[in-house]
Amino acid sequence: MYLVDNEIQCLINRGYGIIEGFDKKYLGAISYDMHIEDVRYLNGCMKPSNGKYLLVPMDPVIIKLKEKIKVPNDGIIKITPRNCAIRMGIEIDAPIYQPGHETYCFIRVMNITKDPLILSKGESICQAMFGKLNFVPDHLYGSTKNHSKYQNEKEYIQE
Image 1: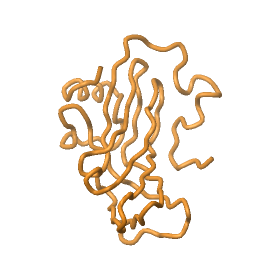
Image 2: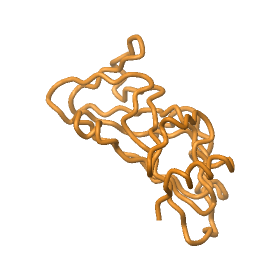
Image 3: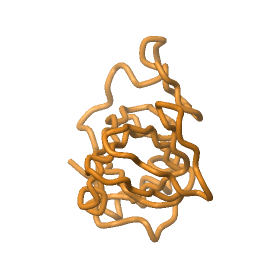
């Protein structure tokens, strides 16, 4: 079950969901708009210019989002593309954040058009959706060494 706006606001008021960078104007009926903080070029060739990032066709980048999340023990957070990103020709891959996970979000983005695209710091191309589980799992994210690698990740960890 996904949460609606007033349930998301209650979650945030309890210290979960978006715990840093929250602004109520970005809260929609069933999601919260997330914003670009920084772009990491995996090929290392491009540098940002005045908060603008060039996305060349078919060259994936990793984007750090501005907001920090904290997933409640009985919830999940799913990052999904916004309609505007799909219409621009941007493909977004993101994990589902598990119960107990606290972190900044990192997404993989690729321009799937034939032309270069420009993204800007602060722009919103994805949204967080908040889910409620029927039970609290026995193994929360961060509770064991095998499931804590990205807990409290501030900078992108490349494997």
